[in-house]
Length: 404
Image 1 (cartoon, rainbow, N blue to C red):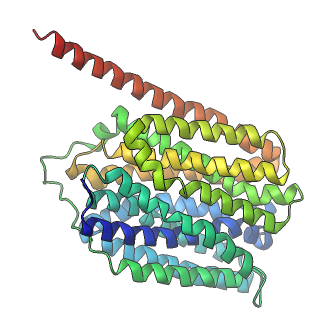
Image 2 (image 1 turned 30 degrees about the vertical axis):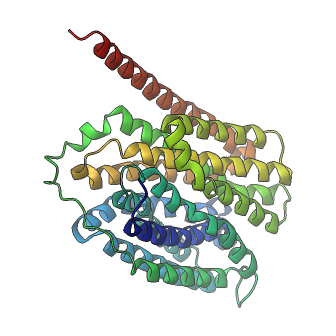
């Protein structure tokens, strides 16, 4: 069944807000480690602003869900983009004042913006019919293709102009979030489903213990945490390896294209081959990145490895999000989505925190070797759920053939 005009209207607007959010996010991920290195007295704290951004995202995830449950998605999205605007101004002020801790606070505001923005994909699932759901999620995440082109280029062309390096970049971030705010005002989203609708909601622990929830979480959390850890370390690792600053921006740009360009067909791949198969391919792409990263540190190794890292994230993140929609009833939607993203960003926070320390202690090789046990964990979760589903399908088939 084709999506309705109303469905497409909201999904395209959400894709636009996603594009602008991701543009802001890519700018921050490209520049914040370098700004942290410039402002921090202790250079081992260079990646702390990005790490605290992820901590703030995790801490804001559940309050954001509760606020939107009460006042609606649109109100939450308006608040989130407003926080992003304040973040841009605060970061610019921190650079002007040469204040590292104010810059860390500005990145935490970006994290709060990110927490609200993570619900764009769920809002798309809410407004889409069952047949359109995986494609709607993919279309929204595909908005990040704009970010792949805009984010690194804005960072590249603004970082050296103005009275202080990088200050104009964060004023540009303010402008991007204002545009996102204007798009949010055009959304026409349905009210949140009340807990009493569609029967009583199950306890959260019961929902979390389902194999389908655990597999969705393993895929999205491992994919996101691995991607953030490696992406955070990449500009600094390239600098350590003697690569030019412009080279790092180019690598990040192609990495972000790898993250979001597959979204145009990931939903269709899930429909054709199944969500677990696509998640398995996502794990394989991440493993391929590790193999390339361990093979050398020339520009092309960084470029090709980071592209595969992005594609792997895409398959695991969209796959995990699609799988999660099978884990809850409509009345359980808000708390299940919040729990999933809180736990996911907890893992992401650990990944971003560890990036600087691993790079400082063991170098680029150490960062990538750390990835492997987590890929094994995600593989085990996907394999276990796949085996369980085959067993259940076989039992149903046998019961239909041999009814008692």
